[in-house]
Image (cartoon, rainbow, N blue to C red; front, side, top):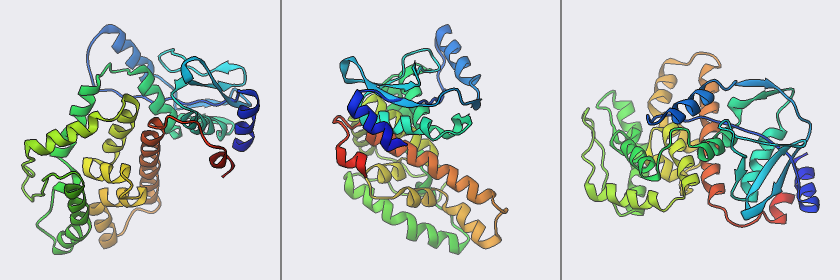
Length: 290
């Protein structure tokens, strides 16, 4: 179906698909509170109301998502437009694979686009960077246990290589600590990461912050976005202590696997969003055919 949609787009400049997601943590104006209210009241499921999904290019090189003859809009009422064809096709796919019931909680790319377009909490790029950097102070892999010995060794064997990689990759010092206060992060390190984060555009930064929130780790998120880690590796490393306890004591049947796969799905969507938001060229025929 997706291949047919892509082919339709190439021939007629039109195709159809939908998606939406919230994000909140700011305070300002009445309009901001109203927007947040509309996001919070959005249904998680809805009966499917369209048959065809398509994308179409509009003025300024942007791409719209169309559901039958309706143009998709954000929860805030804005026209749903994305900066490039690759992201448009990915979002359209989310809408296209929905069955009789639209399950919005599975449409992570749509949600991230809505967040970037509506910016419901009215945050600036600088505020997003500051929020991302705060995770460095409480980064998952910076906090180490002193016992049991098995977990101490597991953290050292699994986390130290990632820590060594990021310190070498960005020429910074981070370190780790077993203290409840965590390691003392040098200001030079924060400044280096601040400059790096500032190199992302607003859309990519939205996706990166989402990944950081999922993994509770700036270090693992950078490893994932830089393709040093796979999604599976990054998620496993973010859950290392939990996985250790499960191996030792067992897990609640199906619950553990569900949580892990959900985290993988959200993390993968966030990473994809970062890369697709940075994509400025049209999708190549070879990619569409594959």
